[in-house]
Each structure stands twice: as C-alpha cells, then as structure tokens.
Length: 273
Image (cartoon, rainbow, N blue to C red):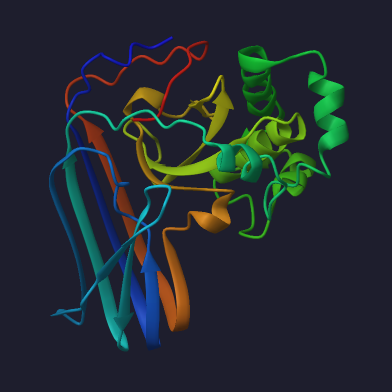
C-alpha cells in the first residue's frame, strides 16, 4: 500500500479548448481541479472573439467545481492553468455513496453484465476482487484511440473488445457493481499519460475508503488529480451544452509533475489525491 503521508511533488495542469458558438449557448465546464485539492495558483478564463465572458462557479456535493457561462456567437476560447501542491484528503464512503454507486447507470450496465461478473469473479472479495477485475478488463480490451462512440456503454465495450479510457472504466465499474461493490468514475488530469488528454479512472469502495483503479495502466495513479466524480461519463463530461449550439474545434490538455513520475505498483491500494 502506498504511504499517504509521503510528500506529493508539485503538479501543474493546463487545458485549452476552442469552440465555434453558432447560437448563444449556455455552457457548463468541468475542467477545474476538484474542491479540496491544494492549489498554489489557478486561473480560468473564457473569451469570445477576444472579449471576456463572465463565468459563475458552482461546487457540487462530491467536490466537482462546475463553471457556467452564457456565450454569444463567435470563436470561444477557454484557458485553464493550475499549480498544485500537496494532496486532497482521502475520500471516505458515506451511506449514500454505498447505495448510489451500487446501482446500474447509463454507461455501466451492471444488471446486464451480472452473469458475466459472477461467472468470472464469484469466489473473490475485497482487494482480491478489485485486482482481478482490473486485470481482467485490462486483458480483455485493446486500447484503441477513436474506437468507441460517445453512446457506447460497458456491454458494447465488452462485445467490441476495444475502447478508450472511459470504456475501460465503465467495464470495471459494471463488473464491480454487479458484485455489489460501490464503484464510480472520476475524470482526472494524469501526468505521464500518452497521448495526453483528460483521463477517466475508477474509484471502488474497499473497507470504507475509495481506492483508485485504472485498468489501462497508462499513468501512475499517485500523480492523478481529481476533476469530477460521478456514476459514469454522463456525470463527468468536460463540457455540457445546456442550450444553443456550440461545436468543439480544438482541445489540448497537459499535466506534469515536478521531478520524476512516481512508480506505480498495480498491487498497491492507492487513494486519489
């Protein structure tokens, strides 16, 4: 198990997103690091054709910080930069979590996949189950950029045998929930990820605490930075167009850690910080 008292190197995260706003649009962004993550500095700005747009922050009960703006037609640019020091406190599983995150959801159809989960993992519990599910998903799927549709859930992912990080995460979540383990999706900044992008991982409830699982093993879990948390990708999208019309034209994401990346032993329990 990793040492939660070990010092966390300074991490720097950055996002640049451009939209073509066709009609006045109400936009909800989920790109800022979650509430509770210690921040040395942070700047978020939105402009349309170079003119600043007012942004309102809303903090969700799980710590996600949503930024809402109304954008007129034109070329919209979002810029987000943050420097982080230290770790957030480890998340604990409360009684509501224990109920909500056992349920099937839009992209994690644990009810459909229940027979598969019990056939594969019937004799396992706790950390042994967590390790087995993560390893199984990692060997069942190929990571192929652009291979899945935004509407694909865990069942379709298993049939296709390929996907991207959110697909790996949805299948892990579905398998764990089918075995009555609360599991949820977390969008993160991921130093060391290649190719760099927003990343999706899983948190699973083990002995009353949330432990992070990444079946892709594409970035060390110790350096991940929480952005948003939810039942599946429908709760954690980096952008939601509430009304109007806006088309994504470009996006770049960057996340780095000061010094060397940590070494991640897949056998360790790691809490997201």
